[in-house]
Length: 247
Image (cartoon, rainbow, N blue to C red; front, side):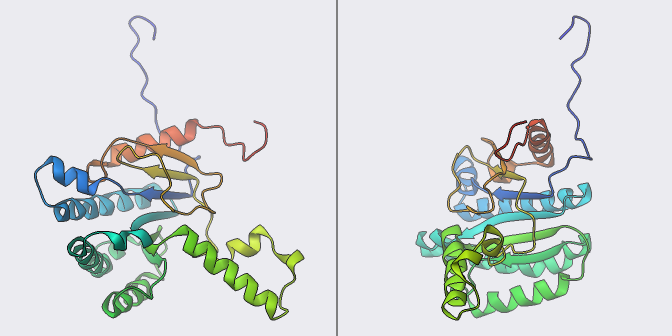
C-alpha cells in the first residue's frame, strides 16, 4: 500500500455471483459449549443464523442454496440430541411457511424421507407445496442426506433401467447420473462454504461438488454473519475457475 493511501476494500461483483452455494453448517455444538450452554442452544442459534443467510442470499440474487441440516450419519448422535434436532427441523419447516415464504423463497428437502417421522414427512409435503410457486431463491434442505446413499440410489435406478432394456451401458453418461440425483435440474454448486475450521466434505454432494470452489472458515456457524458470507463470495470471485482446462 502506498504511503498516505487508504487500502481499498474489496467489493462484490454482482455480475459474477455464484448461482448455487452449498453450506456445511458446522460448529453449533462447539458454539454452545464455549458459552456453557446445552448443545440444543447451539442448534437453535444455528437455525436463526440460517434464516439470515438465506434471506441475504435471496436479496442478493443468488438462485440456489443447499444447506446440510442432518446427515445419514447424524442418527448415531445421542437420542436426546437427535430428538431435539428433529423437533427443531419440524418447527423450522412450519415457521418457514410464514417467514421465508414471505421472502419469496422456494423450500425443498433433499435426502431419504423413509426414516423420518410421519409428522415431518407430512410437513415437508406441506411446506414444499406452499412455497413451490415462489420465484426467489431455491433453498434445498439436506435432511437425512448422504451423498453415498444418493449415488447408490442413482446407480440402482440406472441398473433397473438397464435390466428392463430401457437403456444400454453405452448410454450411461454423467448427464444420466445427474438426472437421477436429488438436485436434478439444478446447476451444481459454484461455491461450497464450511464453517468451524473443519476441512472435509463429510459425505455432502460428492458428485455435484466436483468443480466447486471451496471456502473454509474457523467461524462457528451460529456466528457466521452476512458479512462473512460476503467475504466468501469475494474470495470465490478471486478464483480462476478452469474446470480442468487451462486459464
